[in-house]
Length: 239
Image (cartoon, rainbow, N blue to C red; front, side, top):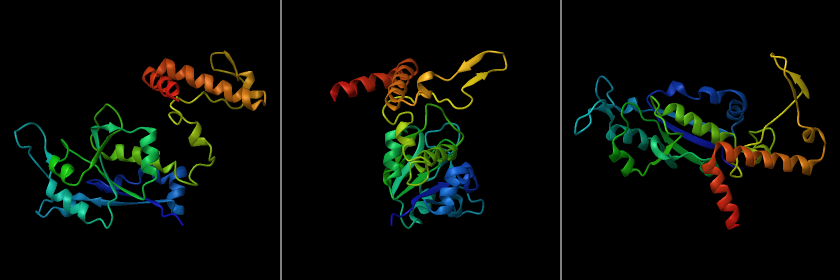
Protein backbone atom coordinates (compact mmCIF):
# COMPACT_ATOMS: atom_id res chain seq x y z
CA UNK A 1 0.00 0.00 0.00
CA UNK A 2 1.36 3.41 -0.96
CA UNK A 3 2.30 5.64 1.97
CA UNK A 4 0.42 8.93 2.36
CA UNK A 5 2.06 12.04 0.93
CA UNK A 6 3.71 13.76 3.89
CA UNK A 7 4.73 17.37 4.46
CA UNK A 8 6.96 18.72 7.22
CA UNK A 9 6.47 22.46 7.72
CA UNK A 10 9.14 24.53 9.44
CA UNK A 11 7.38 27.69 10.59
CA UNK A 12 7.03 30.31 13.31
CA UNK A 13 3.24 30.10 12.99
CA UNK A 14 2.09 26.45 13.18
CA UNK A 15 -1.52 27.50 13.84
CA UNK A 16 -1.75 28.64 10.22
CA UNK A 17 -1.92 24.96 9.19
CA UNK A 18 -3.80 23.12 7.84
CA UNK A 19 -5.85 26.28 7.26
CA UNK A 20 -8.00 25.95 4.16
CA UNK A 21 -6.49 22.52 3.51
CA UNK A 22 -8.56 21.18 6.38
CA UNK A 23 -11.72 21.87 4.36
CA UNK A 24 -13.45 20.38 1.30
CA UNK A 25 -11.68 17.65 -0.71
CA UNK A 26 -8.25 18.20 0.82
CA UNK A 27 -9.72 18.09 4.33
CA UNK A 28 -11.55 14.86 3.55
CA UNK A 29 -8.36 13.40 2.10
CA UNK A 30 -6.50 14.39 5.27
CA UNK A 31 -9.08 12.59 7.41
CA UNK A 32 -8.83 9.50 5.20
CA UNK A 33 -5.04 9.46 5.40
CA UNK A 34 -4.25 10.28 1.78
CA UNK A 35 -1.82 12.91 3.05
CA UNK A 36 -0.40 14.03 6.36
CA UNK A 37 1.60 16.90 7.80
CA UNK A 38 3.68 17.91 10.81
CA UNK A 39 4.27 21.50 11.86
CA UNK A 40 7.59 22.18 13.55
CA UNK A 41 7.72 25.47 15.45
CA UNK A 42 11.18 26.88 14.80
CA UNK A 43 10.93 29.03 17.92
CA UNK A 44 10.90 25.88 20.08
CA UNK A 45 14.56 25.40 19.19
CA UNK A 46 15.72 28.83 20.35
CA UNK A 47 17.67 28.65 23.60
CA UNK A 48 17.41 32.14 25.08
CA UNK A 49 14.66 33.35 27.41
CA UNK A 50 12.87 35.31 24.70
CA UNK A 51 13.03 32.46 22.14
CA UNK A 52 14.81 34.70 19.65
CA UNK A 53 15.09 33.23 16.15
CA UNK A 54 16.46 36.23 14.23
CA UNK A 55 19.26 38.79 14.21
CA UNK A 56 20.30 41.90 12.23
CA UNK A 57 21.94 41.19 8.85
CA UNK A 58 25.71 41.43 8.45
CA UNK A 59 26.54 44.39 6.24
CA UNK A 60 23.68 46.43 7.61
CA UNK A 61 20.24 47.07 6.21
CA UNK A 62 16.67 47.09 7.36
CA UNK A 63 14.94 44.20 9.05
CA UNK A 64 16.07 40.94 10.61
CA UNK A 65 17.21 37.59 9.23
CA UNK A 66 16.27 34.14 10.56
CA UNK A 67 19.26 32.36 12.08
CA UNK A 68 20.82 29.30 10.44
CA UNK A 69 21.75 27.53 13.67
CA UNK A 70 18.23 27.57 15.08
CA UNK A 71 16.55 26.49 11.85
CA UNK A 72 19.06 23.66 11.50
CA UNK A 73 18.12 22.29 14.92
CA UNK A 74 14.47 22.26 13.84
CA UNK A 75 15.37 20.58 10.57
CA UNK A 76 17.50 17.89 12.20
CA UNK A 77 14.65 17.03 14.57
CA UNK A 78 12.78 15.50 11.64
CA UNK A 79 13.01 11.72 11.26
CA UNK A 80 12.87 12.12 7.48
CA UNK A 81 13.08 15.49 5.74
CA UNK A 82 12.78 14.27 2.15
CA UNK A 83 12.98 16.94 -0.52
CA UNK A 84 13.69 20.31 1.10
CA UNK A 85 11.95 23.45 -0.19
CA UNK A 86 12.24 27.09 0.82
CA UNK A 87 9.37 29.32 -0.30
CA UNK A 88 11.05 32.39 -1.78
CA UNK A 89 10.17 35.10 -4.35
CA UNK A 90 13.60 34.57 -5.89
CA UNK A 91 13.01 30.84 -6.42
CA UNK A 92 12.09 29.01 -9.60
CA UNK A 93 8.40 29.30 -10.54
CA UNK A 94 5.93 26.75 -9.24
CA UNK A 95 4.61 25.20 -12.46
CA UNK A 96 2.15 22.38 -13.01
CA UNK A 97 4.94 20.04 -14.09
CA UNK A 98 6.83 20.80 -10.86
CA UNK A 99 3.63 20.24 -8.86
CA UNK A 100 3.20 16.83 -10.47
CA UNK A 101 6.81 16.02 -9.62
CA UNK A 102 6.46 17.06 -5.97
CA UNK A 103 3.20 15.15 -5.55
CA UNK A 104 5.11 11.95 -6.37
CA UNK A 105 7.58 12.46 -3.51
CA UNK A 106 7.01 10.37 -0.40
CA UNK A 107 7.73 13.38 1.80
CA UNK A 108 8.83 16.99 1.48
CA UNK A 109 9.91 19.64 3.97
CA UNK A 110 8.83 23.25 3.47
CA UNK A 111 10.69 26.06 5.20
CA UNK A 112 8.56 29.18 5.70
CA UNK A 113 10.66 32.31 6.07
CA UNK A 114 9.74 35.52 7.85
CA UNK A 115 11.28 38.96 8.30
CA UNK A 116 13.90 39.61 5.57
CA UNK A 117 14.41 35.91 4.95
CA UNK A 118 16.75 33.12 5.99
CA UNK A 119 20.52 33.00 6.47
CA UNK A 120 21.88 31.81 3.12
CA UNK A 121 24.27 29.41 4.83
CA UNK A 122 21.38 27.27 6.03
CA UNK A 123 19.98 27.00 2.51
CA UNK A 124 23.38 26.11 1.07
CA UNK A 125 24.38 23.64 3.80
CA UNK A 126 21.18 21.62 3.51
CA UNK A 127 20.58 22.08 -0.23
CA UNK A 128 17.19 23.72 -0.03
CA UNK A 129 15.36 24.17 -3.31
CA UNK A 130 13.91 27.67 -3.62
CA UNK A 131 10.43 27.86 -5.14
CA UNK A 132 8.29 30.93 -5.89
CA UNK A 133 4.54 31.13 -6.39
CA UNK A 134 4.78 34.42 -8.29
CA UNK A 135 6.51 37.73 -8.82
CA UNK A 136 5.36 39.40 -5.62
CA UNK A 137 6.35 39.45 -1.95
CA UNK A 138 4.31 38.06 0.95
CA UNK A 139 4.66 38.72 4.67
CA UNK A 140 5.86 35.16 5.13
CA UNK A 141 6.21 31.77 3.49
CA UNK A 142 3.15 30.18 5.08
CA UNK A 143 0.55 31.31 2.50
CA UNK A 144 2.89 30.19 -0.28
CA UNK A 145 3.36 26.82 1.43
CA UNK A 146 -0.41 26.34 1.58
CA UNK A 147 -0.66 27.03 -2.14
CA UNK A 148 2.10 24.57 -2.97
CA UNK A 149 0.50 21.92 -0.77
CA UNK A 150 -2.98 22.49 -2.21
CA UNK A 151 -1.71 22.13 -5.77
CA UNK A 152 -0.04 18.82 -4.90
CA UNK A 153 -2.78 17.34 -2.70
CA UNK A 154 -5.43 17.61 -5.40
CA UNK A 155 -3.29 15.38 -7.64
CA UNK A 156 -3.06 12.56 -5.11
CA UNK A 157 -4.93 9.33 -5.85
CA UNK A 158 -8.53 9.48 -4.73
CA UNK A 159 -8.62 13.18 -3.83
CA UNK A 160 -10.40 14.51 -6.92
CA UNK A 161 -13.87 13.20 -7.64
CA UNK A 162 -13.21 12.77 -11.37
CA UNK A 163 -9.93 11.05 -12.23
CA UNK A 164 -9.80 12.72 -15.65
CA UNK A 165 -10.15 16.26 -14.26
CA UNK A 166 -6.43 17.04 -13.64
CA UNK A 167 -5.58 16.10 -17.22
CA UNK A 168 -7.97 18.71 -18.63
CA UNK A 169 -7.09 21.72 -16.50
CA UNK A 170 -4.97 24.76 -17.27
CA UNK A 171 -1.27 24.00 -17.88
CA UNK A 172 -1.73 20.21 -17.94
CA UNK A 173 -1.22 20.20 -21.71
CA UNK A 174 0.62 23.50 -21.97
CA UNK A 175 -2.58 25.48 -22.59
CA UNK A 176 -5.06 27.43 -20.48
CA UNK A 177 -8.30 25.64 -19.72
CA UNK A 178 -11.38 26.05 -21.93
CA UNK A 179 -14.56 27.83 -20.67
CA UNK A 180 -17.18 25.94 -18.66
CA UNK A 181 -20.99 26.16 -18.79
CA UNK A 182 -23.82 24.57 -16.80
CA UNK A 183 -27.59 24.86 -16.27
CA UNK A 184 -29.65 26.74 -17.25
CA UNK A 185 -28.89 26.56 -20.97
CA UNK A 186 -30.48 29.98 -21.44
CA UNK A 187 -29.77 32.62 -18.81
CA UNK A 188 -30.77 36.29 -18.61
CA UNK A 189 -28.43 38.41 -16.47
CA UNK A 190 -29.45 41.26 -14.15
CA UNK A 191 -29.14 43.74 -17.03
CA UNK A 192 -31.61 41.84 -19.19
CA UNK A 193 -29.01 40.37 -21.56
CA UNK A 194 -29.57 36.78 -22.69
CA UNK A 195 -26.70 34.29 -22.64
CA UNK A 196 -26.93 30.89 -24.32
CA UNK A 197 -24.65 27.87 -23.91
CA UNK A 198 -22.81 27.08 -27.19
CA UNK A 199 -24.80 24.58 -29.26
CA UNK A 200 -21.85 22.21 -29.66
CA UNK A 201 -21.77 21.54 -25.89
CA UNK A 202 -25.38 20.36 -26.03
CA UNK A 203 -24.91 18.29 -29.18
CA UNK A 204 -23.77 15.08 -27.49
CA UNK A 205 -21.06 14.73 -30.17
CA UNK A 206 -17.95 13.96 -28.10
CA UNK A 207 -15.37 14.60 -30.82
CA UNK A 208 -16.90 17.93 -31.79
CA UNK A 209 -16.98 18.93 -28.11
CA UNK A 210 -13.34 17.94 -27.68
CA UNK A 211 -12.35 19.91 -30.79
CA UNK A 212 -14.27 22.97 -29.58
CA UNK A 213 -12.61 22.85 -26.18
CA UNK A 214 -9.16 22.54 -27.71
CA UNK A 215 -9.82 25.47 -30.03
CA UNK A 216 -10.99 27.61 -27.11
CA UNK A 217 -7.94 26.64 -25.04
CA UNK A 218 -5.64 27.63 -27.87
CA UNK A 219 -7.42 30.96 -28.41
CA UNK A 220 -7.37 31.85 -24.71
CA UNK A 221 -3.71 30.92 -24.34
CA UNK A 222 -2.68 32.91 -27.40
CA UNK A 223 -4.58 35.96 -26.16
CA UNK A 224 -3.81 35.91 -22.42
CA UNK A 225 -0.48 34.09 -22.15
CA UNK A 226 1.59 34.58 -25.31
CA UNK A 227 4.60 33.18 -23.42
CA UNK A 228 2.80 29.85 -22.92
CA UNK A 229 1.53 29.93 -26.48
CA UNK A 230 5.06 30.29 -27.85
CA UNK A 231 6.19 27.32 -25.73
CA UNK A 232 3.22 25.26 -26.92
CA UNK A 233 3.95 25.99 -30.59
CA UNK A 234 7.63 25.18 -30.12
CA UNK A 235 6.94 21.88 -28.37
CA UNK A 236 4.46 20.78 -31.02
CA UNK A 237 6.84 21.69 -33.81
CA UNK A 238 9.55 19.57 -32.19
CA UNK A 239 7.17 16.64 -31.82
